[in-house]
Image (cartoon, rainbow, N blue to C red; front, side, top):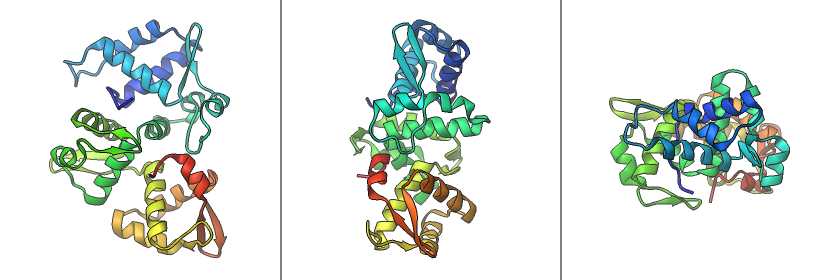
Length: 259
C-alpha cells in the first residue's frame, strides 16, 4: 500500500490507546482516533483517516490483529511476521522507550521500512536543502523506490511525517535537514562505503567515511558516532581492524534501505 494519511501524533495516539486497554476493537480505536483528527486536513474524511492510521500501524508491525481487535506487537510477533527484522521495533518497545522523542524515532524507523520513499525524500533534503515542496514533487512525482510509489499526495504526507519527526524542518525557503533517522544513515553509509571501494571482504577506514558524510551531508561527529554504534548493534557494521570498518551485506539487505 502506498503512503496514505498519517501524522506522527496520530500514530503514537493509536499505540497509547491500545496500551491503555491492553487491547481494543477496531471500532473503538477508530472512534478514539477521530477525536484526535488533525485540523490541518479539514477535507479528509474522518473515518478514512482513522482507518489509514490503523492500517499503517498494522503494516509497520506495531499492532497485531486478534479476534477481538488489536494489541501491541511483541518482538516475537515481529520475528514471526518478517524474516528481516534489522532496524525494526515491536509496538510494545515503543511506549516503553522513555521520552516522546525516542518513541517518535522508533515509530518512524518502522514506517521507513514499510515506506522506503521516506528515506529517499530525507536524503534529497539532506543533500540539497533547502528544497521546496514543489521542487520535491518535480523530482519524485511518478517515481518509485523499492517498489514504494510516489505521487503528489504521498509526497505531501511523507514531508508532513518527516517534519513531525523533526527529521526535517520547514522554513520560508523550503525544507532543511533536522535529526538524522537511522535508516537514512544506513542508506548513505551503504552508498558511500561502496563508492569508497568497500566490499563484503574488504573494509574502508572509518575516518574516511566520516569525512565523506561530513562533506556531502554535513553530519557532525557525535551524530555519526551515535548512529554508527546503532548499526554495529544491529550487525550491519563491524570493526575490521584499527580504524577500519566493514559492512555486513546480508544484514544490510535485511534492513530494506537500498535497491
